[in-house]
Length: 415
Ligand code: DSN
Image (cartoon, rainbow, N blue to C red; front, side, top):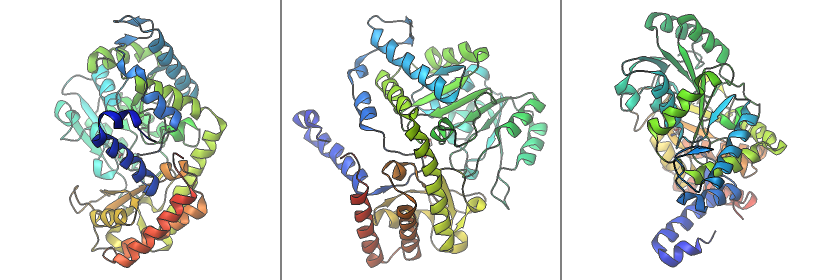
C-alpha cells in the first residue's frame, strides 16, 4: 500500500498511514472489536463517494446527483436484509453507538428507563454508562452476570425488570464470551411490557453467518457495527420490523445525523456481498474455533477465563487468581512489546480501576482473517502465557517477538 497520492501532498500523513499498515502486518491484532477488511472494502471506503451529500434515503434525497449513492445504499440494504433476514434495515448510522442512539431517540423520552448490562460485566458505554449521553438523559439500572458462573443471570434480570419496570431492555455485549439466549430476554421484556434492543456489534458477522443464534425477528430492534466480525465498511446498522421502520429512519436522519458517510455505506455494501459468500461461514466458524483453542491453551497454562471458556470470538481472562500482582494494563503493555496487541479489560466483580483493570480481552476475528488455524492460535496462546508469566523479562519478550515475526510471515496481510 503505497498511498502515493497522499505522499505527494503530505509525507507526514503518508508515513503514518504506511506505518499503520506495517504495524498491522507485523504484529498480531487481538482486540476483539477489530478486524482486517478486504482491499475491496478499503477501496470502496476510499472512493469519490466521500464527496457526496445524500441526506435522505434512496429515491427521497434532499440533494441532486444521488443516482449512484442511491444504488450503493440500496445494495447495502438489500444485502443486509438477505444476510440477517431483517424486514427493515437502516445502513446510515456512523457507528454502533449512533445506531443505538437512533433507537433510543426513536422510542424513548428523556427520563425513560433503560435496563442494561453493567459495563464491568461486559456491557457498553452506550447502554447507559454515566459518562455517556444515555446515562445522563435516561434513568438507568443495570443487570449483571452470575458471579459464580460468569454467565448472564437471566433470573436476576427477570426479577430486576419486574421491580424496575424499564421502558427498554438492552441486550448484546462488548465483553461477554457466551452465546446469548435472546428469547429468554425477550420473554422478560414481554412480561414487563418493555421494548427490547439487541446490540450485536461484536457478533454481527457470527450472526450473519448463522454460527451464533440471531435476535433478528425476536428483539424489537437489532443494532450492530459493520466493521468488527462482519468485516465490512466502518459504521453501524439498525434492523427492525416495518412497525418501527419510519420512526427509526427519522431518528437516524434527521434526528441524529446529517449526511450519511456514503463512502462507508459503499464499504458496507461490498463487505456484505463478501459475507454472503459461502467462505464467510467457514471464516466465522474458524473464528469461534480459534477462540476456543485460545481459551483451552490459556486454561492449560493456569489462567482463569470468565465463564470458564467461550462460545464466540473472544476470551476474557481474569488475572486475579493466576497472576494477582499483574494488572490488565501490565499484561497489555508487555504483550504489545512482544508484538501481540490486545486490551486490558474490566472483569465481573472488578476490584481495580477501569484504567488499569484486572483482566485482558483477546479476540480472534483479525487473526482468523489472516488465516490463523488451530495450531497457529495454540502457538499464540502459548506466547501470551509466556509473556504474562514474566512481563518484565526482556529475553522472553524478544523470543516471543521472533515467534510473532514468523507467524506474520506465514500469514501475510495486504500482500
Ligand atoms: N469499543 C468497542 C470495543 O472494543 O468493544 C465497542 O464499541
